[in-house]
Each structure stands twice: as structure tokens, then as C-alpha cells.
Length: 583
Ligand code: ASP
Image 1: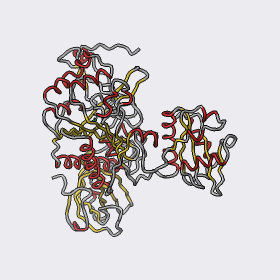
Image 2: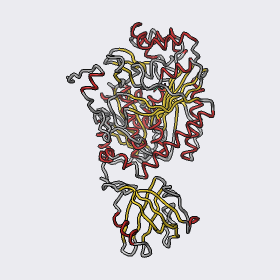
Image 3: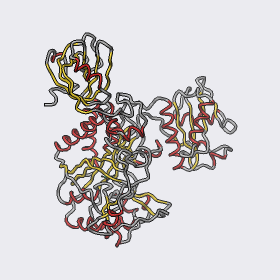
Image 4: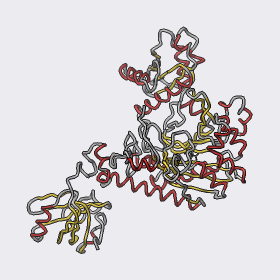
């Protein structure tokens, strides 16, 4: 037997027990008369003591130890004279009787402690060493626990976990597919699923009316910050349900996870139409931990000779409470912020509502106190507040104001990371116009059903049709999304036509699904949550990378394995692939 206990287990109750531990040497402190070893495994750290009573052999072995050596220690548990209340094992130490070196270790390239001195890339290259550190161990444990809770919760309400294949047909769903050449079928390719969307719909047709899977999905997208080419979804589908049924089940799951993992009770999940999210928050994933919603002041701002406002489609204002004392420098830096390329505003107008009741603005040349007071009333500003105004084309201005609102929320400390404010954004548009391809694209995916009451507009103004689609947003982060599906083959064919597919293309790519719809498809709906993002939210992390055991870097590379990599000429030949130079 290698060990009787783990390094996180021993307490005063074990006093005088003879025990055996195994682990990694975190640190050796030689104080002359005594030597201390911090012995670590994933359960914790135990202090090992070598003193004058230890044998010479043990003393010599202790001296030969380096960081991260793997050792086995036999000894007797004793009460510490100076206890360490910060460590769960801090009341005891182990008087060492014997050391066996199980394996030596090269000096690690960075410190393996709570805080490491290693840079990002280095720690990614030696991920197995970084994973020994307790912050990462805690994250992976949280991930495991979250997955267990989800499995139990969904299983208890009759969901079945069913695996779907990883090698499937290439049916682009929005992003590019990763493809895998087939040796047995030269010139043909499998694709890795962007999500098991069509397979889960087929499971509904097959009668498995409550399906879920914690499943890897793959999207060959240009990498943005905090995107991984492979990621994990909690994928679900239900039959004989309406939108509300799906929202209620997943609200229940989300509440359960918050209660179990964070001890947080969440009462309400407001539902906000997409149009309101955009017009009040300038985002389809609004952070509603704080207000500062938009006021459209176009009609009360266009009656004077100020050309910037007069030529604008929309003039939008927010009120930053208690910020009337913002300095010139602070206002200049806000202007710089909205003018940066990613945001793209031309300028920023402000009105300071001083505590003495006077109003001072950057457009005093054009507007008098009476005008400014009207804006203050409209935005519900009080003395002491600051009004910030952007103008221009409606959609762009909303997005720009959305960014400014978040920046102000940040500066004003309104984004409390102990507070969780979920909501459902509902009634998304069915389609969005793509100016590059000059056609409509499905906003969610082509299997999403249009709202019944909007069906009449599908031929005349397809852009106005709303979908039975919904997103769960928590603290401004999109956690998941789904929709009620089309389950009628004619409507599905119509949808593909609307999206610019010829009948042949639709048949070629989605024929199996449309055909399946003809064999008794029940009404169905579903959702997928981003599992990595959910865990990172629970862990209080901004990035999903540290809740994934072996993530890719920002260029989509696995720097530890050095993947992707070239394959041999022989392999290429077998796959009938000849490489062409990228032009
Ligand atoms: N398959 C969708 C996605 O991955 C989710 C869904 O509609 O269930 O975003």
C-alpha cells in the first residue's frame, strides 16, 4: 500500500498514529537542527519534520530532495507546538521515520504554489505542472461538482443523457466546421459538430422527449478573446413543450446551481424582449446589475441650431448618478473611450447638474438652462448627476452607448461580482441581414421557428419577423441560448429558401432532417448552456481558460502538445490529400 492517508486528511484525532503519505515536495526548509518538508497532493499539504531523533539515513535523504520530487513518507502524527490555523492540517505534523524517493524531478520552470511566478505561455506549455497549483485544482473541482449537480438535477426530472457522434456530416450552422478526412472514403470528409443540434432534434423524433448531454462542440472561428475552438455545452432538447416550459426547467437548474455552489438565492429571472434590451441597454446581453438605462431625447434635443443633433437619427442619453463633479480630465478620457476604433463614436456631449441646481454642458452655446433642465427631467437626473449623450445613426449609437454605460458602471463600481442578475432575453429577430453576402442569415440557427403572430410578414418583411428564441444572460454574459424549433418539413424548406439555399442545396445538406420531419415529428424546443462560461462565472473568473484542464492559447494552439502540427507524407497519401500553398 502506497499510502494510508492523503496530505489533506490528518487532524489532531490522528495524534500518535503511524501513517504513510505520498506526494510532491513543495518545499524543504533546513533550519539546522530540524528540517521541514511541505508534502503536497491534491487534497492538501502536510508538514513533515526531520529532527535530531531521525536516523542519519532519513536526514541524508531529506537533504537530497528537490522541489517536486515524488516521495513516500512513513511517520508518526504529532501535535504541533506552533499551530498554523490557515492550514486544515495545521494542528499536526508528521515525525518522519522513513523516506522513499519514488521519483526525482527536474527543477520546475516556475513556482508551483498558490501564486506562480510563471508567465502565461510558459504555464500553458507545462500545463501539467500548473495544474498542480491549488487555484487550478479548485477550478477543476468546481467544474466537476457543477457537472455532477447538472447530471443529477436533470436526471431527476427524467432527462436522459445520450451521446451523439463526433464524426458527422458537414452542415454549417453559422461558423466554419472543423473537418476530418476519411481514409476509407477517399476525397470525403467528416465534420466535427458545432453542436449536436440536428441530432438532438432527431432524438425528439425518436421519442426521447427529454435529452441532455455535457458535450464537446467545435467551431473553426476566428479567435476572439476568451474563445476556444473546442468548448463544452450543456445541450438539451425537450418535446411537447412551449418556450415557457423550457425557460422554467432551465431557470430551475440555474437556481439550483447558484444555491448549491454559491449559497445564493435567486428569485426572479426577468424576461426582456430583444428590442427593449437594445433600446435601453444597447446590448442583446444587458448587464442588469445596475440601471443607467437609455433615454431617447431626440425630440427634445433637435429644436436648436446644433447641427450634430439635428442631423442625427437618434440622440440618446444616460444619467450617471452622483458624477457631476467629474473633472475635465475624466470627461476627456470618456470622450477618448467612445472615440476608440472598436466603439467608433464621433464625440461625447455632457451635462453636469451641479448640486446647487445649475446645469453646465459642453453645448452651452446652443442650449440654455431651460433646455438642459428638460433633458434632466427626461433622464430623471437630480442635482449632483452627470448626463452623457451620444448621437447618430440609431443602431450604432445604441451600441456605442451600451459600451459607455458599461464603462461608467465599471468606473462607478456598480458591477459587484458578488451580485448575480440573470435574465432571459426573448423575442429575438428570426433573421439578420448580412450586407457582405447580401442576404438574410438565421440569427440563431435555421431550425428556429418564427413567432406565429409574425408569420404573415415572412414574405413581405422577413427582417421584422421575430423568433421563438431566447438567451440566458447573467451579469452581461451570455450563458446560453435556444429556441422553439420548426417541426414541419414544409416550413423548414421555406426557411432554407429564405436563407438563400436552393432546393437541391437544402436537400443535400439537410435532407435527412427534413425527411425525418415527415415521420411524425413532435413539437420540440431546446437550449444549450456554455458550460465553460458557467463554471468561470461560478469561479469568479473573467476567462474560461482556467476552468479547462488543457485549453488552447489565443491563436488556437495547444502549446503543450504543439498542435496543430504537420502530418507525414505517408499519412497524407493514405488520405489522398495533397497540400497546396495558401495564397
Ligand atoms: N445548438 C444551439 C447552439 O449551440 C443551441 C440550441 O438551439 O439548442 O447555440
